[in-house]
Length: 390
Image (cartoon, rainbow, N blue to C red; front, side, top):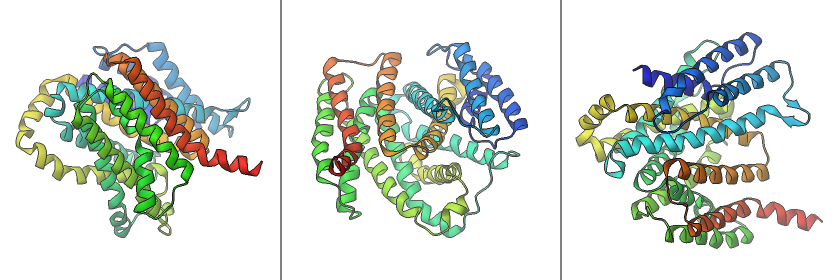
């Protein structure tokens, strides 16, 4: 129990670094909680990968420094936006550790033949509990004032969110994390097709010409994937489809008059989506893995690798997604594209090294082509627009 508790405290400290209201007294409190959490967190991952105490403490102190800067009314030092840099830092760290802890939990529970649906749903449950905690904790986050009609309108987004998450977790349980991330990088191809033919939002010819590059990169990476599984490829594609639907449905949702004001913040929107996504996931968990839930409960109680990494992955998932939303909200389209591209490279290479996955040259070439195509897809319209203006 202490083992799991140390993971929770550390992850809460990192994920909530920007969640609380600014204020000098709150900064001091955050400093104490975050540094205490960082110190307790070390044993949680000791058996799987080593972390440096000084690095963890430095990251915690950096998060507090960001709050202190905001409290003084600043936010940039020497032309550098410190809070934004910290957003990027913790977004990348959260995504990196989510992929590792998620894979460790899945592997310990039996991989794709084990409990991927149960684990994906419980990760959302952990995030939902944390979101509710922020509403209940004093001076943490204002509760949303959404109506039942708003909740009903959010259901399509929540369904797509739950579907994308579950399919992603299954893909990562069936194959290598690096391979799953390479396939997931092809999401723009799915988004383009849906925008053009389902939502009647035309995609430029230049973007269409980028798609063969993306798809070709994924195919090339698949050829030399030692841990290739058709189920991993199909599941990652399904995750891309759900993610593309979610993006379009979210745009429609946010056009609802007064909804932004009733939600109150980006954090509240993500918390509500996570809570709804968890409840939507439950029927699918019972349909696919309901007959062996008792076996999972026993594994969860007796195997600390499963319990600690499941809880940690749920917190990392919630934290990095919220930070990603905050980061992208503060940046332009080109910066977003660069950030997403860099994140994929860091996660693919970093996780592959930690987990001992294949880094075959042909696979990495395919990865580079695919991610390069995604980057070009993201900025091609802006580049052509600037050329026309010139």
